[in-house]
Image (cartoon, rainbow, N blue to C red; front, side):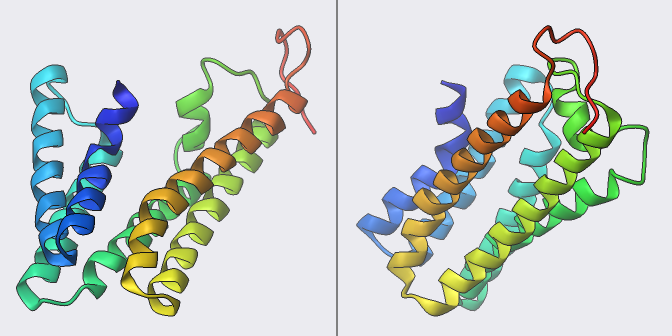
Length: 183
């Protein structure tokens, strides 16, 4: 159920686009993000920082798309979000005592400091490349291909990346999971 909640705005955008056009779909994603943020606040009395950043960018880039009537802004939003995540993960290599990926997974997985830092950099590369790929698709293909990529491509690549990350982590975690591993 949480996965459906997380993907609600993008699914709403996709359905609205298929039924109407990019501008109506942009208005729909703005409303969906506002609704999602409100529900998250009411249920948890807090909003996840990644969701808040993404929501703010939807409001800014979606608002510009509607105000200027230029789809490039909503297309750029995917890239900006991914590049901001890449920057956040990169900065966490140097600020604080743990990189972001270790803060997210460290209680469940035991890895050595060097492996956490390497995994964090892998996430940096993934977010950067996903942002660049979004621009490539947006400027090399028609709008319909980009909308399909935004839903199926981004989610599919992310799931494949997470699966690959899981396999990589499994190869690094000791069989008894009681000690840290350095590679």
